[in-house]
Image 1 (tube, rainbow, N blue to C red):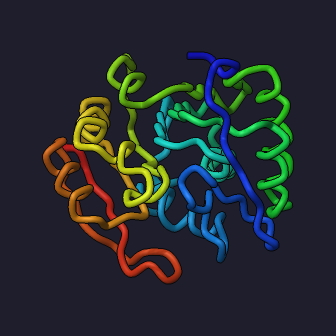
Image 2 (image 1 turned 180 degrees about the horizontal axis):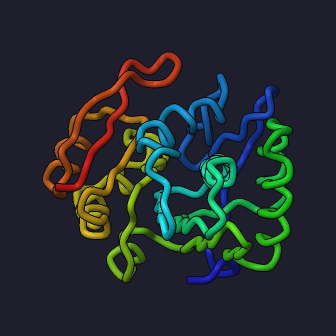
Image 3 (image 1 turned 90 degrees about the vertical axis):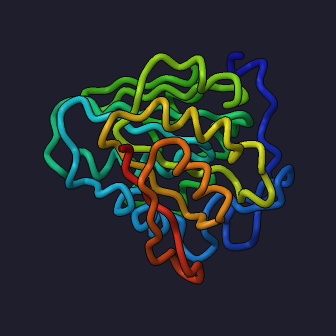
Length: 225
């Protein structure tokens, strides 16, 4: 499925500029500080940027606004890397470029990265620069992820809440995450739901809990056995 054939995101906006999915009745990122949440959960949760190396590949469930990508891309460049960060994301309901730009405008320090992303998003779902190779795979991850022929060094599991979007947290999809993770690769997610943790353990990860972001008591991280 290409972007033109995909179902679009259904978005409404809160007064503080945070986009909310009306399909899943859930915000796209923390209403407290989405960028701080991304850095706490997905970067620190995967021990990044310390693990960055040439050819490093991040994969993600739920591209959303592109916030996680921009935070990782910025960290990659600031780490001194001169090769391309590989970033693959699976998204069923893509936002329009204008919606993404509006959401990302909250963080001026991401503006140069957001501008490059918006320009690429207008023409498709890939972006290649001197320091990034991005591929956003549009469609139902239950179909697209098993067909993916690559594997990741780190996963950002960032679908909407398992209680609101259970399909993206199914044992089958999380098993595919395990199948497409390099040995010693990692995942991080904001959720500590028991059924998600058990599914990731069954998928081959050693799973543990860490302190969550903001009001969330716990989050989950893991390493592929």
